[in-house]
Image (tube, rainbow, N blue to C red; front, side, top):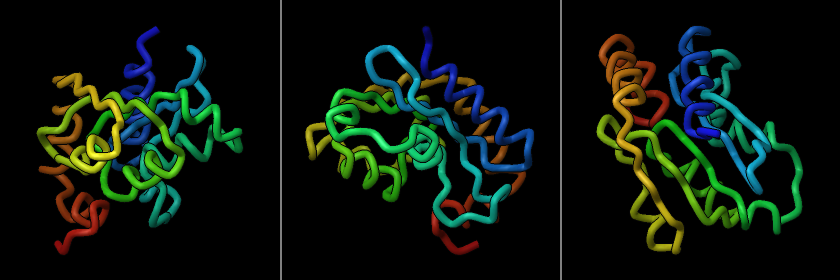
Length: 146
């Protein structure tokens, strides 16, 4: 199963709802524990990014589950999402693309997290089109002034 595709489906769904097209899936032992998407616009949330939504949807899990999981995400994780990955000691992150936005991959790597960048053209085109059309929403999402 292509777990990154699950994250991409979430990103497409988020865009169709009027949100930022970032999706994620938390996977352990070949099972999707939670799939989510950026819901900041839809829910008026300040913290509901794709990765944090996937964690929320996975629900409470013992620490040992996170420590053998992989986070699949369509976009390089921001500082907040990187912090959540580090907090739960998720050892591996698969990133759809990091050209439109370079998150805190450096911090993940510094903490021994395996980072795999798929360099997906679809992930890149979803984000590039969104950023071009709604730059103010994108800037708000990553905590930058408009």
